[in-house]
Structures are given as structure tokens and as C-alpha cells.
Length: 402
Image (cartoon, rainbow, N blue to C red; front, side, top):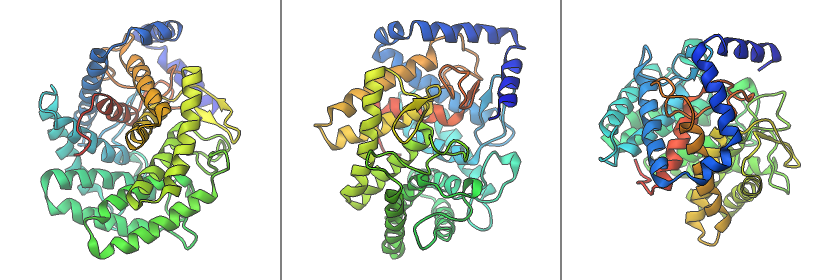
């Protein structure tokens, strides 16, 4: 986002009287963050979980279709975002497995409606559009890879073949974008190659169990991509070509770093290949140490792991999920256990402390902390709340399967 657009968001934000309350509440959180974290308890974390789910359901029910959008304080709701709607579906179905959850039935209804909508907007080539639905973009590899996560959750939940058939068409299309070197070199975001294709490969590997005839071929293609990604990783575990912009690719956001590391870890676990898992663990531990030492992460990190810009809670939630996986896989990884628990407290504090109570804003996790940071400034991106809810369910030991 350029300086002009950023300043315009500031101006639009302050045009509403109640936004001044949000502004001062945000400063209060910054000033008293240590105290908030120290007095936060498991009951408050569970409250954050339920309120986050309520907001996700509201994000689906409030629009003109059955997808989920993002709310900006300066401009209101966007149109639905197919990619993030896709991976919100597994979150809602997982939440609904705990029948005592106050929003369990609503979560199922929202997930099923979102799934039907995603089937309706799938392109004839098998992919799904990039960006927000009103932008009417062509199919994009990364976005398609996230929607097949939702298709798998719906297939496992309902047993309906339509979700399996939809995913198969999507996966065939995705693999057709992979070149001989292992890069997704066509039809990906911005038309540039990026390493976070690992987060596309991982759900395809999960799907491969349902397509026995294609399993070996898909695993070979997955390894081809993962091996290319490892060529982009430095000795200190930092990853080149990891940002979702071109002009800041030298210092990627923790959001896309987490995508890449999580994809490596999950794919390595599925393939039982330690080199992929170790590549993920190295980067995860580097960021965990920085988080525990400082109490917060920066939003971006350069090749020397020097941080800049405001904390991005989305990436924090994603990293907490990865740290939780590592801690479960290796009981000696005490750093991962400490980091994910501490991060979950921070996320819960950010989402629930302050002046936001209305349905459009209550319980949602913001794009940046403070909210005027450069990433999704003054926004409540639905993917931030999705990952917070996932991480808090881990914290409370809820079921891991949809």
C-alpha cells in the first residue's frame, strides 16, 4: 500500500466518532500489554475462541452471497474472498465437533453454505479466482490450493462425492502450472514464483490418500516443488522469494513465512522426510526465540532476520499453530511449547481487549497490532480470525480433525 492510500485510510477512520474510542483503546492495549497478558486466563481464551467463531459466521451471513469477506473500519465489508472462505470451512467444522460450543450448529450451517457457494464459482478450468469475488480474476494456484482444504473438510464431513470431484479438477489444474524445475511458474499471484506453494502442496498430499491411482505421481510432483523451495532457503533458515509483494520481497511478512514453513512441515510429515521438516523447524525456532525474547514479533524479517514494521497477528497465529505441531511431534522442543502458549495469550488479548463489541468487529483479530500498522491497516481480515480460532482450539485441546 502506498503512502497516499495509507493516509486516506487514516482520514476515513477518524471520520466516525466511535473510531476515536477504538484508537484510544488500542493505545491502552499498547501501554498496558504486559498487565493484560499477565492477568489473562484460560476462561478468557475460551471466550476469545467463541467470539472469533461468532465473527466468522457473521462474516459469511452478512454478505450478498455465502462467502466470507473482510471488514475495514474505514470502508466496511468487502465482497467475499473465495480463498479464505475455503480454509475457513475446516475451522468452522472443527469447532462444530464440540457440541457444547454455543455456535456449533451455526458453524455447520455456515460451512455448508460456503461450500455450496465455492462449488458454484469454481472455474471451468478447475481453479478458483484470485482476490475478492467482485474482481472477477482468473484462476490462481495459491488461492485454489486453499479452497481444496475446504473441499476436503466438507467431503469428510458429508461424504458427498461432489466435493471430491471438485477437488480433483482443481488439483489437476494446479499441477499443470508446475514447471520442470518445481516452480509454480504460471497462473500464480502477481505472476511471480514464490516459495509459499508449499502451503498448496500440503493439502494436495492429504487429498492423495483419496486418489490411489494418482498418489505416486502427486507425491513426486510435491517433492519436485519442495526441493526447489529448499534451494531458496539460506543457511540461517530465511527464505528468499517469500513475500506477497514485489517491492518488499527482500523482507517478507511473517504471514507468508508461516505459510511456507507450515507447508514444509506438513508435507515433510506426510512424506516422512526429515529434510523438509527440519527446514521448517529451523525457521520456526528462529522466530520463536525472537518472540520469547522480545514478547512480540515484527511484521517483516530480512535475510539477516532483522525485523521491521508492526506485528502481524495473522502470522503470529499461524506460527503458534506450527509451534504447536512441532511441540506435539517432539516433546523435547520446549521452546515450541512455550512460544505457542505465550502467543495464544497475546492473540486473545489483542482480539478481545478494548472497545470493539458490535457484531461487525467484536471478537475479530486485526491485521496489524497496533491496528494502524501497514499490513491490512484498520482492517479485520477474515484469515486473521480463522488462524486465531485454529490456534486457540489447539490451546484448549479441541479435536484436530474435521
